[in-house]
Length: 423
Ligand code: AMP
Ligand code: MG
Image (cartoon, rainbow, N blue to C red; front, top):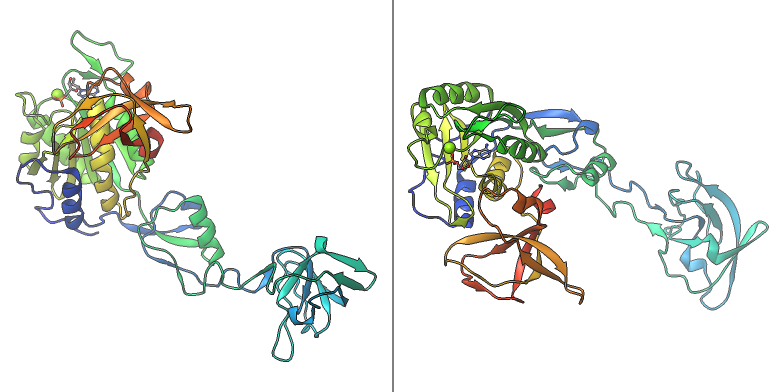
C-alpha cells in the first residue's frame, strides 16, 4: 500500500482559499486504497485502478444498422431505380459466408456483418427495407441514397488497443457496458477505503436513548455515513465518543489500526472541551486547515500512526459542507479516484446579500420558476450552521465566489442542486 509522508497535511495556519488548499493537498496525497481484481458484475461504483484498454474493436466488424439490403453503392443508378437480384441473407451472428458479387443485393438484418466484397471493392451501403420494394428474387432501389448509409464501421466506437477509460474513473453503468463491449469480464479496481466514523461530544447521544438535560441526538453520523457510503467508502460506525483526551486517544489509535482513514465530527474548535487535537497529538500530528469558507470551521487534518485523520466541525451544516467541498475530494484522491467537480448551473439571485471579501460562501436556497424559462433562487431565512431544516426545506446551494462582495436581485449566481453534491 502507498505511504503518505508524515507532513502531508502540514499547514501554516493562515486562512487559505478552498481551491488553493485542495490543489496543495492534491499534490501531496497519493492513493492508499489497495487494488483487487473483481468480476465486472461487482464493479458498479468502484474506481478503476488501471487504465482500461479495449481488447477488441467495437464493433468488431462493419455491420448493418438497419433491416434492409447490402449493396455496392457503385452499382446504383443515380437518376433511376436500380433492380438487383437478392442472392443471400445475413442476420446478426450469422454472416453471409461468400464474397458478395458485384451487381447483387444481400438481405441483411440489424447487426449482421457486412458481406465481404470482391475485386478490390466491397458492399458499402445498406438500403433500409422501408426505402425499397421487394419483387420476387430482386429488390427495386430508389435513387439518392448516400454511400455508406446505414453501415456501422468496425472500430467506430473503440479501436482494439485504445484506452477505453483512464485510471481513477468511477465505474458507472455505461462504463461497465463499454468495458464489456471491449472484452473485459473482470477489472482492476480499488478496494473501498475503509473509513472509521466517530461522533465526539459529551452532549451527543444515540437517537432512541433517553436524552438527558443538555443532551442532543447525534445527527452527524447518519449524515456522514450516507455521504461516505455514496462516495464509495466502506464505513465502520464507531459510535459516539466522550470529550476525554485519553479515551479519544485510545479510540483513534484502535480505529487507525483497522482502517485506511478516520473521520470525526465535533471537538475541533479551540474551546476548552475540544480534546481531539490533544488526543491526536499524543500519537501523531494534527494541523488545522483554516479555510476561507462559510459556513465551515477549521477542518483538522492529521495522521494517527500513519493513517489520515479528518476532524470535521460539529454543527451538522458545517460538517456537511466541509465534507462535500473539502474532505470528499481528499478521500477520493486517497481512494485513487479523480475527483469530479459537482455539477452546477447558473440561476438568478432573488435576494440581496452582502459578504466579506476573500471568502467563499454557500447560501441555502429554494428555486422558483421565474415564468420566463429561468430560475430564481430565494434564500432560506435561517442560516445557522446547525439548522438542519435549512437543508431539508431548500433545493441546493448558491456559491458566492471569493471576490464577490454583494449580491442583488437578478445577479447571476452558480447553483448546486443537493443531488449534485451527493446528498
Ligand atoms: P463542536 O464542533 O464540538 O464545538 O460542536 C459545535 C456544535 O455542533 C455544538 O453545538 C455541538 O453540540 C453540535 N454538535 C456536535 N456534534 C454533533 C452531532 N453529532 N450532531 C448534532 N450536533 C452536533
Ligand atoms: Mg464539542
